[in-house]
Amino acid sequence: MALDRPNDLSAFWMPFTANRQFKQAPRMLVGADRMHYRTADGRDVLDGTAGLWCCNAGHNRPRIVEAIQKQAAELDYAPAFQMGHPKAFELATKVRDMAPEPFEHVFFTNSGSESVDTALKIALAYHRAKGEGQRTRLIGRERGYHGVNFGGISVGGIVNNRKFFGSLLTGVDHLPHTHLPDKNAMTRGQPEHGAELADELERICTLHGAETIAAVIVEPMAGSTGVLLPPKGYLERLREITKKHGILLIFDEVITGFGRLGSSFAAEHFGVMPDLITCAKGLTNGVIPMGAVLATSEIHDAFMTGPEHMIELFHGYTYSGNPIACAAGLATLDTYAEEGLFERAADMAPYWEDALHSLKDCPHVIDIRNMGLIGAVELEPIPGEPTKRAFDAFVKAYEKGIMIRTTGDIIAMSPPLIIEKDHIDTLIGTLRDVLEEID
Ligand SMILES: Cc1ncc(COP(=O)(O)O)c(C=O)c1O
Image (cartoon, rainbow, N blue to C red; front, side, top):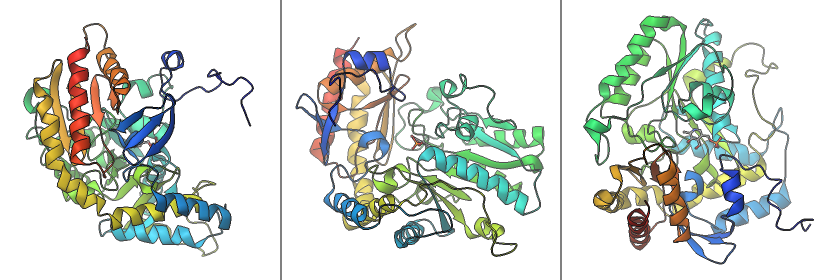
């Protein structure tokens, strides 16, 4: 149906967007293929961000498109509660098989935010099932991003995502963030300094009583806050302390899951196994909303008690394991495997790292960080106008044909894993021009 008022942009209240700025000068995308978006004014824009960190196999991948089309005609929807359909079981098995060994069970959600709130709820209910119902506290980290639902913003640590929304969950505390620019600026890969920041968890345990803490949730590599890598030894230390105190460790892998760092999950990449993993985004290549929580058998089995006709976990969504999302997920994971995209990301990472760090002499640049196929360029803020410089860079970059993302005064990039070296040259070369042109 045609719009009554064809060019009316007023009805759509856009998420995480400067609505008034956008509507004056819209950046409208109308198509996408592999590494490029197509704009309404007919330009190709190189995707330096895999959409929103999610289109890991690039755009318009035939296998995924066909799977969705076929599934829509075969079984469009099946009730998610007390009923099943084969593809949900097939996808859960596939995710399990590609996850690190202890993760035997998969609970489907529709987004990263839902995965996070699901994992927090599973952690609380697990302790209760084990007779430790006093473990109700949840620990997050400053600058952490865990989506936008109440659980996620409570444990999250991005101030603007929290401060407008009341008192949030009670019983939450936060670890300090790990950004130490004085010591770690311009590090390639994991920084040397900061492992000791994990010891703050001991202080929090002493303060509240470790036996009251249910879970610690962190992004193994913090993405949305501007790509903060874990200092060497930091995740290991968190794992040690949580284990010692019987606290569950949750890795939020909504960005790092499905190849971003060159392996299926960051847990495998860093060799540190949490108790729960949240994921979304790359699970379906971003094409259909879907997320998941991966649980160990120890956690899952703690729920499998009581009369067999009883529901074990009172949680789920109308669209948990939606058939079309499952079809998209299966086709996505097949595409990753067939094209060896995770290995490709690992192979391309050194070239990506060199290209990114070649920007260190550009105006305004105060730090560059990278790992796998992810990278950030941090800019000196304009005095009195934080975020403006990076936003100007984002707008100019789009005009020049590259898509980047900004958060604060940090430019973040996470291209599709199908990126070629000449795309990297174009992306970084154009970004250099942008940085030289902005004030
Ligand atoms: C680590 C992390 N957790 C959760 C989310 C929220 O995901 P969604 O936007 O799908 O709700 C994101 C989104 O970027 C994320 O990066």
